[in-house]
Amino acid sequence: MSLNNIEITNFIVGEWYKDNLVAQPVAAPNPTRSPSAAPPPTAPAHFKSLGNNRRNITLLVNSPNTAFLPDNHLAFLTKILAACHLTIADVAIVNHAAAAVTITALKQQLQPKTVLLFGLEPTTIRLPINFPVFKLQSYDDCTYLSVPALDQLVPDTVESKLDKSRLWACLKSLFNV
Image (cartoon, rainbow, N blue to C red; front, side, top):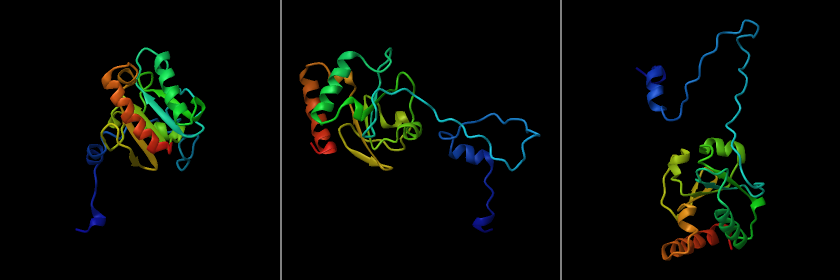
């Protein structure tokens, strides 16, 4: 038996890719369409973002019960961006709690070169890799940084000051500040 003659059943394919495949209902054949015609393209998932995404930088937050994030969190992010010589117009802020985001949909819609995950594990957005907080990680033509949630960074506590200094060290390296 050669490797060219191995038959892979639908069951095996389903088991191998169970986290990546989505079952779609099969439509009845359309007698007016020729069998060789390509099916219509499906629209990619669409989610709302705040900012103009001029520099292809995505800030993913997890802020339940808000469209994007509370005012104090936005003020904090605005200060961080200013320190990095960036503005809200340079980034896209996406609230994962408002609409669950996957890396595939994110790449289709925003084409990020940099993604900051505030309070989200990399695997939450279906990244096939996981990495610790405050570690810059390159993968698939994009740089990722996972940091604690904004709820932990915004307060003025000893722990948050330590986390803010670790975040600043990463941002200086990431944005050459």
